[in-house]
Image 1 (tube, one colour):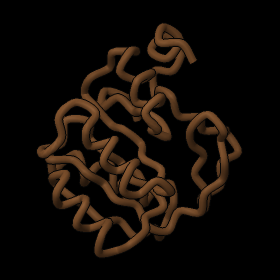
Image 2 (cartoon, rainbow, N blue to C red):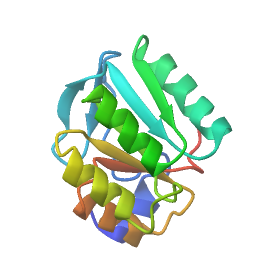
Image 3 (cartoon, rainbow, N blue to C red):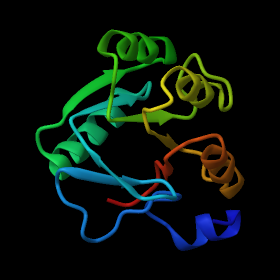
Length: 146
């Protein structure tokens, strides 16, 4: 996906493919669009209202998934270390404790099997391309409509 196409053609979810036939028990992500059972999702964002809104949306879409929240990269890494596995991490690109893509890189190196969906107020198509190149499963701008 080119940077220009990422921002222009996907106003809701950039870099994340969600087919219309997605079932409530699956999430489709990344370029390969592989199926993943959703049981435990970690939401990492320093804003409680954003975490709450994301949790509400996840519960509406996937039902009974366990949702774990973290407000910093250190807290997120601790949660993942304690839990051992997550089906998906939603990571704020600018979460406290991360600089640039360092949070994504740390997650990918420490938990390579855990898909990471980057969420950000920054919408530069080049950032989307870099996030995907560094192993993000997808990228969602915070300005996305419902």
